[in-house]
Length: 273
Ligand code: C2E
Ligand code: CA
Ligand code: CA
Image (tube, rainbow, N blue to C red):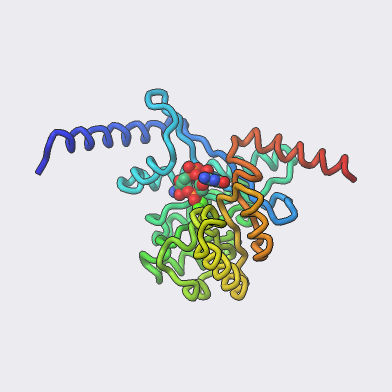
């Protein structure tokens, strides 16, 4: 049964979809980068997060438009844009003779079963003369569950070319860590919902402990995301978590700010020596 409210909703979704298509074509999207740190505060990489500023609507959060793109075929164009942009950033870093951190990109579950996405990654790295080891691909658990066999082939191909693979939002899905031993995953990211419940829920502590110890027994590193407080950081340090990402150390920022951020830190390190 169709009512007026539903029609309006469908119309506004279609309008948003058209605007997103134009935004991709007109290069109106941006990648912001959030540094990832190891426990001694060295930067080990940065995660690329999509930002869209529409003149008509203002800032639109990625959760909204990524989901929209996933429901239409736009996700292929969106992922392609992200891959090209990330490679472009790495190439410009190289051109300025700066040492670039590894960049992690989020790829949609929808495209993973399809080997053409893997081929696109390989071709784009070649085009921009970027080493695949400079890129990490973040996938969510649900991406792995849709078609295990095809996914495994895609991940193995990625790994054999030198890309690193991280499992995002870990703990929120239904996959068990035992599935991981058959997949070439180098990093799991503990979902921020667990980190943010630290101090309020004993369950969150147990889950984090279990993820870290099981991942380590499979030689997989662990990063905790959404770290906002000293208390959360301390707990994670005690549990031997390998890496930290969150507002406590740094928020996502435009590329130019990240270059400045890295520059300030290396100057400060020189002064301390
Ligand atoms: P995600 O991959 O789990 O990304 C982490 C989100 O947590 C980001 O939100 C980041 O800004 C936020 N965050 C980081 N540190 C903290 C913290 O300390 N506290 C809190 N409260 N939040 C923190 P963002 O940028 O809004 O992205 C939301 C989601 O949108 C991402 O979740 C990811 O699923 C999706 N997304 C973002 N960029 C892309 C992309 O390029 N491609 C695809 N397919 N999805 C993307
Ligand atoms: Ca992510
Ligand atoms: Ca995440």
